[in-house]
Length: 88
Image (cartoon, rainbow, N blue to C red):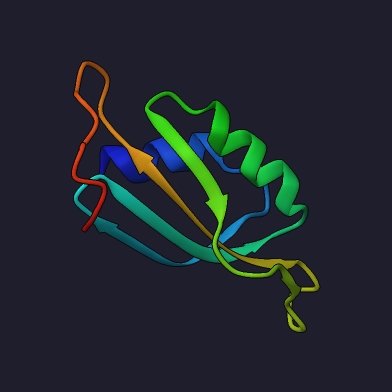
């Protein structure tokens, strides 16, 4: 999909997505990345991405030796209006 393509462009090299949940304009991603701070910075720069934040403590994934994360953000298509309801 277009959204997955956008994520592929935004996410740092080596990032693995384990789970992607979209509810309205709220997005949650669980996965692992070499450096979680780079992931959050890249998402925050993305067009249409607002309020990107980690929603669980970072931890080292024992298999990949990367940082496991859960991040959420609000996404709206360009020209779209943000959801004022604030919930799923």
